[in-house]
Length: 115
Image 1: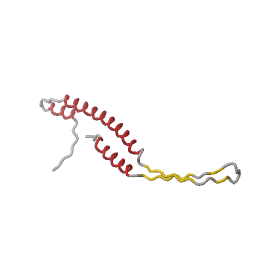
Image 2: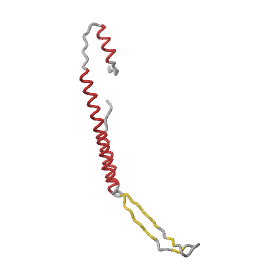
Image 3: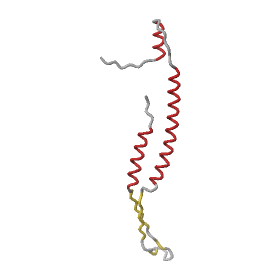
Image 4: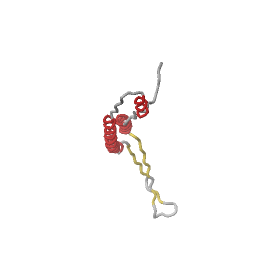
C-alpha cells in the first residue's frame, strides 16, 4: 500500500502533544533553509545578468549580411533626382546555434527548482 499525504507541522505537533508526546521543532534548520534559498535566488539573478551579457556578445556576431546596390537611375518625375536600390540579405551563422545551445543549457543549470 502506498499513501501520499501532506502534513501540517503545527497540526501534527498539536495532535502529538494532545496524546502526551513531547514535541521538539527544529526551527533553526527552517531558518537556515530560508537563508540558503535567498542566497540561491541572489546568485540566480547574477547568473541571469551574466547570461544576458554573454548572449548579447554572441548574438551581435550571429548574422552575416550582404549588400547589393543597383546603379543609380534618374527619377521619372525629376531628372535631378536619382534612385538607388539597396538590397540587404541576412543569414544566421554558427554563432546563432551556439547562442541557442548556450542559452538553454545555462538556464537549465541555474534555474531554482521548487521543492
